[in-house]
Image: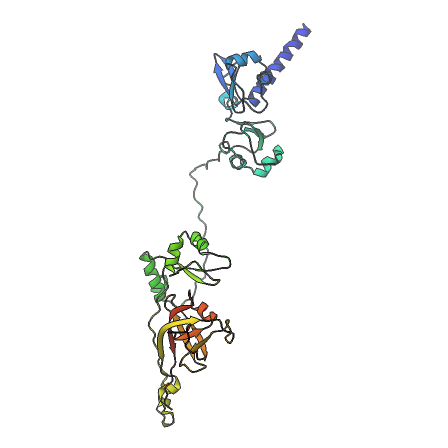
Length: 391
């Protein structure tokens, strides 16, 4: 009688261990004629014999139920058992989420599915890639379908946020802070008006409202090519060259390229009003000389300019040669193609030869760069104080 009790207890322990194995290793349980049918997903090194030993059944029963299908990683195999199917055991315990089972250690066993990676699993279970690699002793981020991973944390669908409890609580009114009044000289009716901005700002806003293209300029850096710049701004090389009137692909460091919009149009030149004292002094008898002697007149010239590399001219300085302007004259030079201007000093005259034929001014490389010149010869405007020949 004592032996019979021992055998009964041993059989009960075997059933409990089998039930625990089913819960731990299966990915689902189905009802098959009142008996539990374990749904198992094949992992690496699984055989019919190892599966049968895991669930405490006969290998031939599994093979007969599954028509001896070929086993490979990820294949679903159904294992018939003689354990009664219990609906009270709960779909919560018998049917854990596919490929995810929470163990007693607090780690979640996850079977790697198709198209899954460590980043997806870390986000799903609220952990990090490094933590998953540490727990599973992984040296790489490569995963295999059917690979079983121990993952700290719980799946995102299990982490249900606690809904806020709505109650008829009386809202607490926070006392208002006493603000110190700010003293200002602005009238009350204009105190909260939005500033209209300067005329230039208004013009820019008008262009923006009219959907005019935003202005964007690029300065060429070292090792940059026209193909690289065009690709950076999602343009074609022909569009970039047409935008900047380029005839070839040559660029130089510091060159300005127009990407979007147009260069702003400068207003007409308006000479500053002369000071009354100056006008009175001119009327003095001792100052009755031609006005050009005092630099009050202005000479405007238009024509072709050229920059040269000459040993007598420092290419880094703003120097020019002119046919008639006196040495020491400071003139304003404008490139209408780029709408850029600069000032340079006349240091001498130039003689006409093959390279300076039909040229009104010769300049250094520094002046040409400041004007954004694309070629050695380009059209330009000159403005400087003239001097009459009268003495």
